[in-house]
Length: 137
Image 1 (cartoon, rainbow, N blue to C red):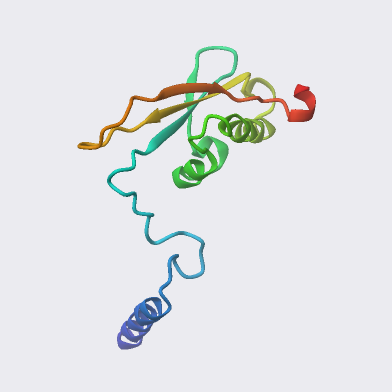
Image 2 (cartoon, helix red, strand yellow):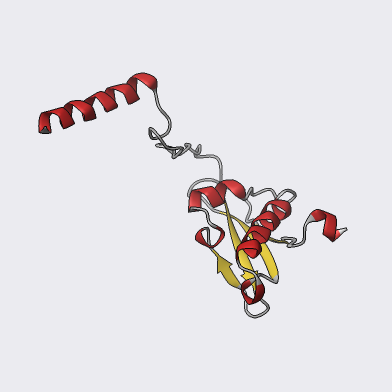
């Protein structure tokens, strides 16, 4: 029984190497993250929400995503970001009606400094529309 397990594990590893798999078998989870070149400065996007009181951080798990999924859904481009974060806010409100619904949502984009890479500071906050585009007009 134990030797059959070892043969199966080794066969899986050989198949992964031969097929050059980028995600784990039977899932859509990536095995490796994309390498960011040293001259590129990454951006961090965080969501800030309110239910009418104080502002608080809205996490990936609050909107039903994992941290990587949230990062992929929130582009650092401040021209495109309001639509993307507004969609997440509407998704949250559809799952949390009434007093738990968000009254306001903002996205903050910050450039993450990297040692040895010159870059200008970047810290911008955009409003995320919670009403659908057709209702906002």
